[in-house]
Every structure is written in C-alpha cells, then in structure tokens.
Image (cartoon, rainbow, N blue to C red; front, top):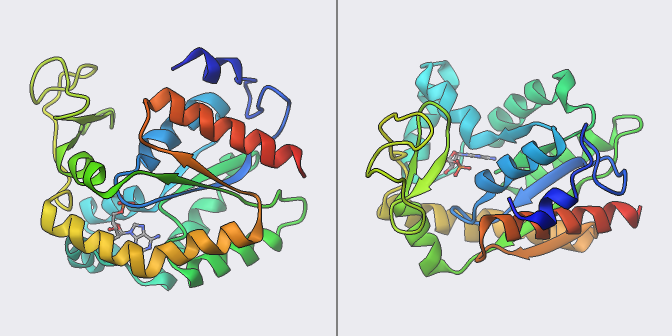
Length: 241
Ligand code: AMP
C-alpha cells in the first residue's frame, strides 16, 4: 500500500482526521476494482466489506434455495431480484460489526435497491448518511480485467493473468493454491453484465451524484493510488458533514 494510504490510517475504524467512515457505497461497472478496493479499505478502517456478489456465490456454493435461483441469473449476467438481494443485505447489516460503518460492494445495483438502502439507513437513529464513490475505468480495460481475473479460493487474493500475474503461473503467491476463474468472468457474460450495468446500475450512480456526498475516482491507476483517492474523497465528504 502506498504511503499516502498508510498515512491516512487512524486505526479502529477511524480515518486520520478522526472521522468515522460510516456507510460507504462502492459503485462502478464490473471489473472496475470494487472488490479489490473494498479489501484495501477493510485493512485501513477495520470495517466490513459486504459484497452481494460474494454473498450470492456463497449461497450458490452452499446450494441454498437462493443459490439455486441465483446461479442461472448470474451466468447470464443479469440481476437477482431486488427483494431477495435486499433481504440478504438486511440480514448482513444486522450484524454488530457494521456499527462503525461498512463498505457495500456491488450493492445497490438498481434504483429500487438504492431506495431501499437509503430509507433503511435513514431510519436508523444516529446512523451517518451514505457516502458513494464511483470508480471509473474504460470498456477495453474492463474486458481485460474481467477475462484475466483469477482468484485464490483459500485467501481470496485477486490476480490478473495479463496485468498482475502471480509469481508462478496459476498458483496463489500466498497460499500456493491453484487459482480459479469465476464462471461469469467470460467475454459473453461480461457483455451481458455491461448491458445490465448500463440500463439498471448507471442510473444508481446518477441518483447518488444528485444527492451529493458523491465522488468519482479514476480506477485506471495502481491499486494503492485508487485507494488513496477513495480515502481522501471519503474524508472530504465526511468533513463536509
Ligand atoms: P459481482 O461479484 O458484484 O460482479 O456480482 C456477480 C453477479 O451477482 C452479478 O452479475 C449479478 O448476477 C449478481 N449480483 C451481485 N450483486 C447484485 C445486486 N446488488 N443485485 C442483483 N444481483 C446482484
């Protein structure tokens, strides 16, 4: 991590200026690096990452009713129905580790999901308002990031065979486990996910832009620089009150 990010570290869920991070939404198209950045912010602030994609994949792995329903939808690059995703997020938000804040990664993805989370947070006494950060990367770069992405099934470290390969091909540097590719990280599914993003999720970005407490960060930079951009945006927006 770069010194600029480390310098912002305040520990125990606080930023350097003593600001509680509160609820943070990471927005952006598939492959912009929401998951990677959420993990950087978790390390920095000690608040949890809540990734609806990860929660859904866990349901698929565990063969739950939700997982059975979600699998085909995810393979097509479409969205799981709002009511099911909202319920899944409600259960996760009820856990006590969300008290100082949390990073929602991949949620909300539709305007009804945004309306749901906005009113849920507004109804919690003392809860900070949401800060939304949109990460931007151009289409060609996204395609390379998605089709090159590989994960360690043990520690969840994310690699890219073109942009950030492991030291030994196909093997995690940390765990030595064989890397895996997400089944929806193929070019045809990526195209479906981008169509879904443009029609249903891009309006969510505009919703938060219009509300204020919104920042845009260039995602086509080294991981630490993107993280530093997000941290300074969150600090600035929180300081504005
Ligand atoms: P992700 O890991 O965020 O790219 O999500 C993978 C897939 O899970 C998406 O392509 C959707 O099919 C599904 N998914 C994740 N988050 C949501 C959400 N907020 N609403 C509906 N479907 C979702």
